[in-house]
Length: 183
Image 1: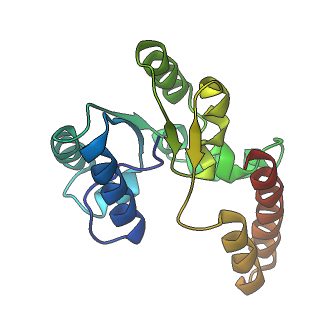
Image 2: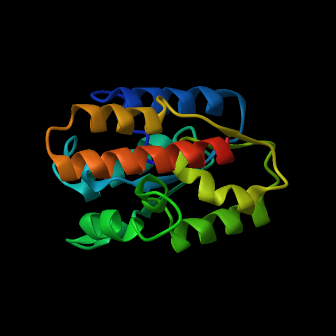
């Protein structure tokens, strides 16, 4: 499971890391990829999001047995991201975790785990931890290119605006507790 479409392997370090991880694992194993579509990331690389999805599907299908992309719910509406940030203040989990909660992803993962006997399920970020119960009988690995709670707490320290400083601090603290529980 990936929090982004792992293609193309240029520009952002996370894209390079994710793409080459997927490509290398696929050299030795049958790889099934479920990835969230981050519209802004694709739009920064391709003329349109759809062109990015089409090219990514074509390239990743060359070495992955199955490739499936899922939209991020909060990106489907113009005010989705601000609403997610605000509403997460009233939910048990921080915004970073609520960001990728998706019925469509859960259904896709249930369908695949019902069809394929996986040796290992790789979670590419802490934000995918809500899907761990779906694969609870499988071997799992979770990693990320950074510790998200530390990044948020550092951002809170450097933020000049008081409201943003408070928001990032509480998000970082909540995420730090979540990381401790999930990992």
